[in-house]
Length: 311
Ligand code: NCD
Image 1 (cartoon, rainbow, N blue to C red):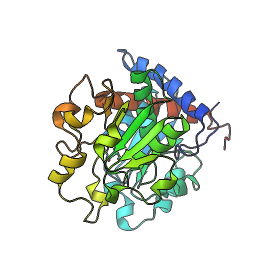
Image 2 (cartoon, rainbow, N blue to C red):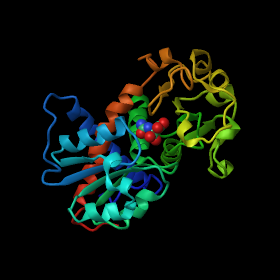
Image 3 (cartoon, rainbow, N blue to C red):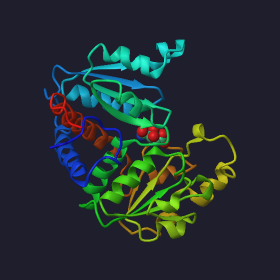
Image 4 (cartoon, helix red, strand yellow):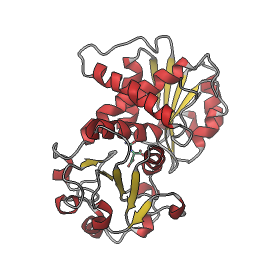
């Protein structure tokens, strides 16, 4: 049903895989709105969350998802771990592996680190964001949010705006939205476009008015200052003026266009605070809600394959 041992990226998933995850997540979204939200789907399994980068919503979301499905969930405090004593990522992984976890949720600042780790352990590995590479559960929760708001996940025009170059969220979304046959536009300063962007099969512009024209979905990205080593933007003020989303720029999109942001937001830098809070346009809180449901669905599907030996 779901032919994967790990969830490393959207790139490896088929259209059917994506729909399978979203359909199951839809059921978990309903469960999460009930008072009693506990199931035993992951009962007896051990989930370890290893976050080598700070995270608020993703880590909490994976923890809640695991607990709702009955797993034993452990959060490794990576700041206090042996990594600080010089242990390599692989040695840490092998040590954990010897304790027989079933699900390993990993966030790491280096692109490709999660894949490397997956090759060394026996359990299912879930990528919770690796460098600029992929953040698959974010793209899946975005897709579920879009599908619920728009009633479909194909033939939509989606503008992904801002710091594309440093964003694993943008990359995973480009793969997913492309696979589902949408029109994807990347909008942002030329300095924040990834190299080889012309080969990605998407439209590219540095002009917000042009980029937002007729869009069904406007997805804003955080300016990832921690991944910049200077010189990418003129000033935050100038950035907001040209690429920050406000009501005037949004008026170029379709009248029922939705506004998204993966969080954490820099209000007044990439998005106007009032717009972010406008429940008639912004689905930012629903994205967080769908995050738990999507992570429950993915962990459920991967757990079914633990004995099955899927690829
Ligand atoms: C994103 C991330 O960490 O890649 N955040 C998230 O997971 N919700 C985006 C970001 O940090 O800007």
